Every structure is written in structure tokens, then in C-alpha cells.
Image 1 (cartoon, rainbow over the protein chains, first blue to last red):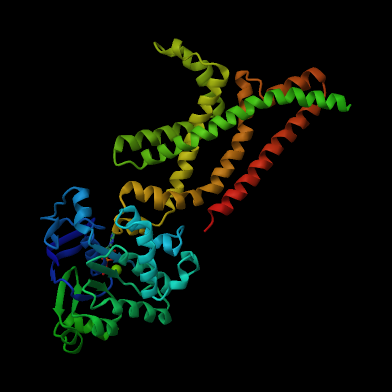
Image 2: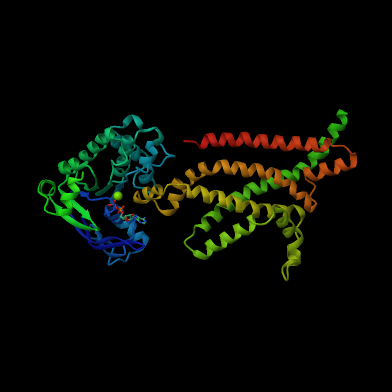
Length: 244
Length: 217
Ligand SMILES: Nc1ncnc2c1ncn2[C@@H]1O[C@H](COP(=O)(O)OP(=O)(O)O)[C@@H](O)[C@H]1O
Ligand SMILES: [Mg+2]
């Protein structure tokens, strides 16, 4: 469960988040849409501690990551975020490590798994994203779609309860988005809470339980996909969907 | 003739010990020290950052020869502590070179770190890596690859810079060849000394080519 109350965040005098209130239930698949610059990435990044909010409260599974804009010690923050993973627009694979190294480094560093367990899990997850044959490949030899699938498998190695996706297909050639979306779709229904910032409206409509339209740093619309896409009431949302 | 060449060579080889000592001590100590300075220059403690920046500025902004003179001739004149800072020639040369090269390596490593995509730190963070592990496992290996060509360059410069130790009277390769030229009234010792420097630099060039191949991914 993710709960945010009145999130505020500015970069200098650019007031980006202006009171984001959101409550995401365990296992929900939430798509966040909205115009560029509306604060979608900033919001997502603040959930996992990559941005520090100036005001408001963030609770993950009931534990406070920030309370009224104040953060606990770094160790506590890491503890609160341990059940979350994130997939980035630009993959952020570790270029000096093989695919196997990318997957196993984190669980080994955290002593979460032994070497053998990590290797077995790595093989399982690569099979799941359809990249078993790439286990010893270096990231530089992979296509964008393959990189992103590796990045998803890497995040899954830590058994996250919550996975955040920030435009996971925006950096891909159009013909490669399908393979990544298929892997993401395969994850729905596994009980993992997924929060997905995306411009893939067809995908959002198909897999999301709930669609959030962010605009001007607030949640402007929050509803079921059919409400948001088929019968939008909000004028800004209408304009946004028309412009696609 | 050949007898003459052999004796010139054997005299010069007596100087190469100093050349190689200053080179080895400088490489072995200034690289870790430079790395420490790099971390200090990015520390969360502001005064530590300022001191490092000032240090690098002063070292890079003054001649190495002046620094050598300062350590060997100048330190003993310092009030109070001066009498305790009378160093031998070799020790003074080593200290001045290590302090000087550390500043250059600091800048090379700092540039290497700046070239690393911030996304690498973010990926490490969301995967639960702590600061230290992020540095050791994720950042440093990438930084080394970026920095290696500059480190190679600096190392080759160092071989030639060691000739400066002759100005504080250390009988290195440079100093001995100069003395020989003066006493023999013949340019051959310079040519042989040049050959020896070239052999050293050739070996280093090959070594770094190997290292760069190894660091590629
Ligand atoms: N690190 C940053 N420093 C300064 N401004 C930023 C930073 N990150 C985002 N912004 C600004 O915050 C606003 C919202 O950005 P973002 O959250 O990335 O929007 P979105 O993901 O919806 O396109 C933009 O105006 C952007 O320029
Ligand atoms: Mg964004």
C-alpha cells in the first residue's frame, strides 16, 4: 500500500508537486498519464526516495518515508523502500557487468541470496522475460527492448511488492515496445503493485485497474480506465487525449 | 668505441635506480592519494571540499621544480618545525612528486566520476546498494575505464618529469648523463639516456594498451 498526503516539491522556484494525494492499494495496477512536465516522474521518484519532497507525507505499507516533509535517517529510508523496485526510461543497466552480473549483484550484496540461489533465480527470471540465451551477454550488445527486459528482471530479483515504471517504453523504437509491454502485462496478477507512468494509452486501458491523470502537479482525474478514456469529464484531460 | 659505449651505459645505469625509485614511489602512492582527494573533493563536509580544491589549485598552479625546491631547501627554514624537516634528497624528491602527482590524479578521477550517468547511482540506490558498495561495485569500475587513457598519459609524463630531481642534486639518469657529457665533451651520453627513457616509455605504453583492452566492455 502506498499513501501520499499533500506532496509538495519545488525545484528552485518551479513548483512541481502541488499537493498530491493518492492511496494505492496492494496489488493494484495504476497507470499515471498526463502532459510532459506535469510532475509524473517527480512523483514516482519521490515514492522511492530518489527525490526529497519539501512537504507532505509518504507512507509505504504503513511506514513513513516522509512525515510532513521530514525524513528519518537514511538507514530508515532504505528500510522503508526495501520492498520497492523501479524500472527507468533509460534502463540504467550496469554497463560493466554481464546480464547475470546485473541481476545477481544486488541480492548478493544484500546477502539476500547465496551465489547458487542467485544464479538459479537469475536463470528463472531471464526465462520469464524471454532472454535465457543472453545470460552472459554484456548490456552493450542488447537491443533497447532486451535491455529493458533485463532491467525488469533485475528489479524482480529483489522480490519487490511494489514496482514503479517511469515511461519504460519511451526510449524504445516503436517495434520494440511490444516485447516490453508483454513482459509487464505478464507481471500483472502476480500480486505485485505496479505504478506505471506511460504514454501507451492502449496498454493503460488494457492492464490498469486505475488511471490517474496528473496535471499541473496534482491528481486531476482518478478513475477506472473506461471512465477516464471513454467518458472524460475533465476539460484538460479531454484536450490531452485529443492531442494524442 | 664499443668499450666506450658500454662504460657510458654502465655509468648511466647507476642513475636509473633513482629514476625508477622516484617513478615507482610516485605511482604507488599518488594514485591512492589522488583517489582519496577525489572523494574528499566530493565530500558532504564542505570544508573538506574547499581544502581539496585549494590544494589542487596550488599544486597545479605552481611549477613542480618550485615544489621540489620548497620541500628540499625550503622546509628547513620554516619556523619551529623547520629543523625537523631536513630531508634527504631522495625523500624530498619522493614527497614532492607524490604530492604533485596526487593533485593531477585527483583531477583525472574527478573528471572520470563526472562522466558517469547519474542513472547509475539511481539504479544502485533503488536496488538497495549502500553508498560504499555503490562506489566500489558500480561507480569505480566505470570511472577507471574512463580515466585509464589519462592515467596512462600522466604516467608517461612522470617518467620524463623524474629528470627534474637532478635540480636538487640527485644523481639520476639525467644528472649522470649531463656530467658525462661535460667530462667527455661528447654528446653520446645524452643519446644513450634518451634511448633508455624511450625504452621505459615504450614498455609503459604497451602495458597501458593491455590494461585498456582489459577494461573495455
Ligand atoms: N532534477 C531537476 N531539477 C530541476 N528541475 C527539475 C528536475 N526534475 C524535474 N524538474 C522539472 O520539474 C517539472 C516536472 O518534471 P517531471 O516530473 O519530470 O515531469 P513529467 O515526468 O510529468 O514529464 C519539469 O518542469 C522539470 O523541468
Ligand atoms: Mg517524466
